[in-house]
Each structure stands twice: as structure tokens, then as C-alpha cells.
Amino acid sequence: MIESILSDWSVFGVIAKLLWLVQLALIVHVFKTGRPFWWLWILLIAPVIGGIAYVLIELLPNLSASGGGFTLWKPRAWRIRELRAGLEETDTVKLRLRLAAELLAGGETAEACTVAEACLNGAFRDDPHTLANVARYRLEAGKFSEAQTALAQVKVEADRMLGNEVTFLRGWAFVQAGRHAEAQPILRPIESVLLGEQPRYFLAVSLAQSGAKPEARAIWEDIRKRFRRAGRGWRRAEQRWFKLAGERLKGTAP
Image (tube, rainbow, N blue to C red; front, side, top):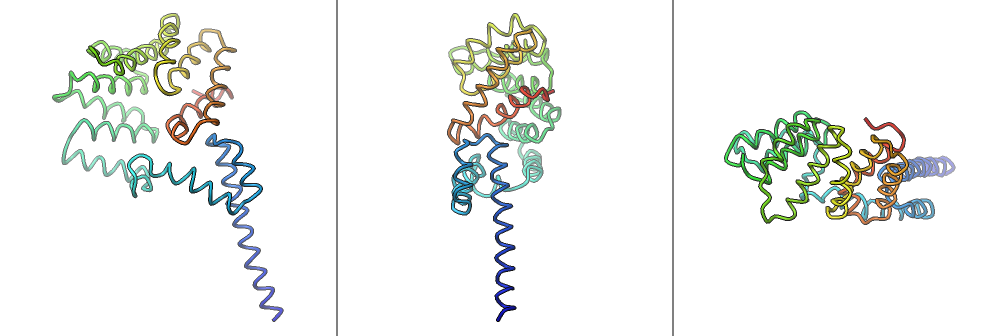
């Protein structure tokens, strides 16, 4: 009888420790990913129910957001391998840009750029959207002069959204080239037109590199604050800039 009770208490102790570890991991996740701080109170006050709610509301939607189903549960290496195999069967611009996106997200920036640049070898070499995409990957790889070459070939015509994107990419290229007097007049107005934090992030980079560090810090801090107040969709899309803004504030960004 006593041994049975002690055994039950031992099991409860193990479960309690596991729940505590899960709760701690979720709290760390809140801090690391910029979730609203009120999640901390929920996790602390109701660890089990709060943890389930956090997983259902914050984690699961993110895992299925870009295609649903089982796709995003696969390791990135698997997704990259499948996209490579798909390209061997059917080499399309769409597949190439998907592969480039996965490579970039995995830190393979140079290869992502090479994969994207191959889009210009076929029928889409003069397509304005393809050129803009290639220019973006060239900028990610630090190839600002090559990016400017691609942007110079883009015929925007009546596509206002593409025009705004190309304008931003030109401003970004000027930041990379250290031409801040030309970059900032482009990035200041465009950041209120384009959706997302990337234009503001690079405006702040330009400001910091040209000596206006207090203004740059204020922008990066605001990016972080707005991220925490935003909904899931915004946080999912802008997580990279939230993280990079934090690294800039700490002085650890490259």
C-alpha cells in the first residue's frame, strides 16, 4: 500500500517537473520571438491551460501558415531537397524562387542568390517581377552593383506596387554602397507606403552609419514595440526584422 502511494507520488513528481520544463520553454519562447508580454501572466497563472492555449493560438497557426498540412513540419533540409528534386523535373521560376527563399531562411545566402539569378536565363529574363526578385537576392548577398543593374532593367509602367518595391530596393542598394545621402530621401517616404518593417529597418541602418544613432535606435526600438503589440500575421511576417532590430540595439548585428 505504502509502496504504491510512494510510486504514485514519484510519477506525479516526474509529470510536475516535465510541466515545469515545458512552461519554462514557453516563457523563453515568448521572450525570444517577441510575443505579447501578457502571455507571461497567462503561463504563470495557469501553466497547463495557458500552455495549451499558447500552443494552439501562437504556435500551430505559424506551422501551417505557408502552405498548410504537413509541409512546414518537415525540416528545412527536407524541403530544400524536395524543391531541388522538383527543379530537376520541372525548372520553373516559381520553384526556383521557392528554393531560393528556403535557402535564404536557412542562412545559405550566396546559394540562394545563385538559384534566383538562374531565373534570368530563360523566358522570364526581362520580366519585371523576376528582375526585382533577383535584385532582392543580390542585395541579400551584398551584391549591390549587380542589384542596381537588374533594377535598371525593370519596366514598372503602371504597376504601382512593383514601383514601390523597386524604389525601396534602390534605397537599400544605396545603403549597401554607403551612399546614405541618396538612400535616406528614398527610404523615408517609402517606409510609409510599403507594408512591413524592412524599409524602416534599413533607414535606421543608414542613419546609424551616417552618424544619427539616436534616431536609428528609436526606429529599431519602435520596430520591437510594434511587433509585440501586433497580431499573429504581422509577427509571422516581420519576425526577421524584430530579431535584427534587437541585434542592432545590442550591437551584435553584422
